[in-house]
Length: 199
Image (cartoon, rainbow, N blue to C red):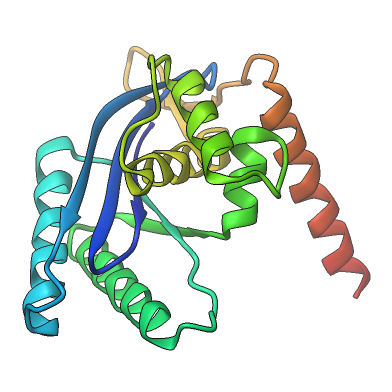
């Protein structure tokens, strides 16, 4: 499964593309950051962000886009820019016929590190470890995008049907034993689902 992760932003928009196999091993395909200058008109900045995302999708053909869910912050201008960049990413994905999944920062941290309160340094270190890199992609926006892609892939990979050599669909491949971070994420997902059912 190939997933593109987007860490939305106007000044820096992180983009990471990863491949995840049936055994949940992840490999880095592409990582980049789209940058736009603050002095540029807003519509032109959004155009650059959209064009950058679209170019990566066109070149690497991901099956899914994993995007950070936007939350309200004290800095209204920052959250507005993040929300606008998120909208552009979803628009591009819809044009390309790619499904979009939204993930909270806590969900991503839990998936990657096994701890929902992990800091950026810890997330970056685990991204490097999961992808088999000597160091985390830089800047942090790039590492965050890769973390989103990994989270989205781990969440969606088990639901994808495999194909036999004849081309017919088969039941999803049973994954190999999960890493501690993956186990923690799956447990949190089950707990959240149980709480919703009890409401």
